[in-house]
Image (cartoon, rainbow, N blue to C red; front, side, top):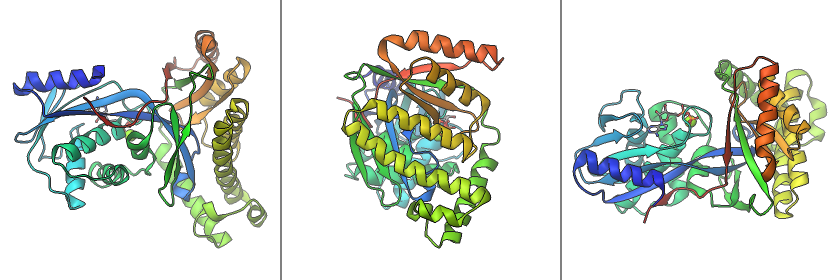
Length: 370
Ligand code: ADP
Ligand code: MG
C-alpha cells in the first residue's frame, strides 16, 4: 500500500474501530499541452502526478472523515466543505442509476489543494472507484469519470471540462493521456521521463487566480462567436485557412485554439518518436500562443518560462487556465536544483511572491490498494 492509502486505512480504523472493507486512491494531474482547447471540442494531453488522495471505505451510516482536515461530516447534508466532493460522487452515481447503499469513509491525501493540480478530481475519482468496487457496480472508468464531472459541475457547482477526471481515472504510470474532448476517446502516450533523464518541474506562482472567472467566460464566449462567424460547430472544426475570415479578438483567440490543437497532435507524435527537443519546442510555442494570442498569461508565468528558456529547460509553459496558477518545465534530471534556484532568483528580482516548486513523475491513475 502507498503511504496515503495506509494513512486513510489508519484513519478509518481510528475513527470507526474496525478494518475498512477496501482502500482506493487517485492522483492529481498536470496538463502537458492543450490549453483552452477542451471547451472548443479539441485535444488535451494531461498526465497523472505521483500525489494522491486515498479513501478507505466500509459499511456504515454515512460518516465521512478527513484526516487532513481532522473533520467528520455526514453524507446527507451539503455544506460547502471538502465533504461535498464525496457526497457529490454518491449523488451522481444515484443519478446515473447505480444503487448506492450506506457506507462510511475516511480520506487522506497529499495533492497540494487549490493549486490547480486537481485535488478535487483526485478525491472524486478515489471515491468513485471505491464505491464502484464496494457496491460491486462494475461501472467502466470513462463512465466513472463522467459521474465525477457531474459531481463537480452539478453538485459542488464548479464548471469544468472532463480532463481532470479523465486524467485521474485513466492515466497509466509512465504515460500521458491524449483526450479528444469531443468524442471523449482517450489514449495512452508513452512518457518515460526517467529513461529520458528528464524531470517534470511544476512552479506554483501562488498568484490568486483573481480574474480567472471573468477572463475564462470572456474567452469562451469569444470562441463561440468565432465559431459562429466561421459557420462551424466548434473551433475544433476550423482550419488555419479559415482564420483569414476573422479579425480582432476572434482572430487571436481562434488562432490559439487552431494552432494549439495542432500542437497537441504534434506533441503526441514527438513523444512516440522519443523526440523531447520537439516536444519542448511545442511547449514553448504553446506558451507564446497563450501569452500573445489568448492573453491569459501573467508576468509571473512569463518570468518562469523565460527563466526556464535561459536555464536549460527543454520546454516550459503555463498550465491550467492561466491568470495565475502553475507553470511546468521539462528539465534535465541532474539540473533541477540549479534550475529552481535560478527561477527563484528571477522571481525575487522582480519582487514577486516566492513560488513553490514540485517535481513529479507521470503516475498511475486511480487504483484499488491491495
Ligand atoms: P484543485 O482541484 O486545483 O486542487 P479545487 O478548489 O478544485 O482545487 O479543489 C480543492 C478542494 O478539494 C479543497 O478545498 C477540498 O475541499 C478538497 N480536497 C482536496 N484535497 C483534499 C483532502 N486531502 N482531503 C479532503 N478534501 C480535499
Ligand atoms: Mg479542482
